[in-house]
Image (cartoon, rainbow, N blue to C red):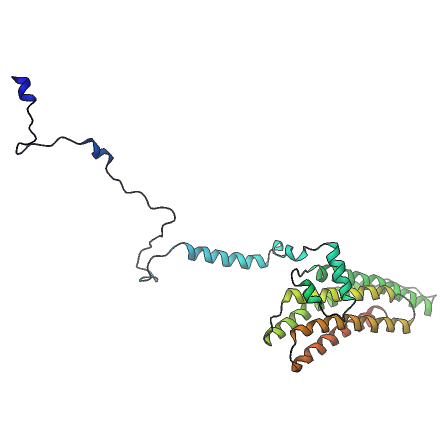
Amino acid sequence: MDDSYTNFPTSHLAGSVPAVVTEEKNRYKPEAPAASSPILPPNNGPNAGRGYQTLGSEEDGQQSTNKWNGVFSVSSYTEYFNVDTDLVLNRLLSSLNPATGDFFSKIDANPDLYGLVWISTTLVFVISAIGNCATYLMHKRSDSNSSWNFDVNYVNVAACAVYGYALLVPLGFYFLLRYMGTSASLIRFWCLWGYSFFVLVLSSFLLIIPVEFLRWTITIAAGATSASFVALNLRTYVQSDDLMIILVAAFALQAALTIFIKMWFFS
């Protein structure tokens, strides 16, 4: 009798307690938000009413800071020295033939700063060393009995003149042409003026000849070649006849640099 009562179903009786279901152990639990979900800041700051914000604004700020840091990083300029020997020789030969005026089309895909740095540095040391040698020959030719001393100041003057000219003059023409509404490129201007010094390097070796008339002939020829190379290539940025004064100014400045080298180092 006792066993029969215990097996009697009681779930239909009023007030009975249903059996505990084991599935309650596996009932739904909310998952944590994914890492990519937007962050909801408290809506009580200066951005109240603008909805949720993500971390993108902070990342954009870091990226803009990194861009400015790249300006002062040496690694940011390595791409402008990515040239080989054949490419440099081709551009050097182009500077000796200014009549073509197509230098910008040759460097359009890969402008470099190799000419600005290394050709300018070569010019500094060449005019300093050859200038002293030329002064020595002229001194011995006029008065062989007196002593002669090497002038170390030639290096300081050459560095200030060449580096200052190579950096500031292209920068000035860049801002001027940009003000005129052209799409000038500072890297291309520095590349142009850097390679324009190559003919001055070659002429400096010839200026060692202690004949004044021949020196002036070499100076005029080298200055005209270098100045024409700069002016004729700048012509692509000057479409109006009213801006031809810019080409004249570029020609005159380049010729003035050549005359300065002759007068200071080879007189």
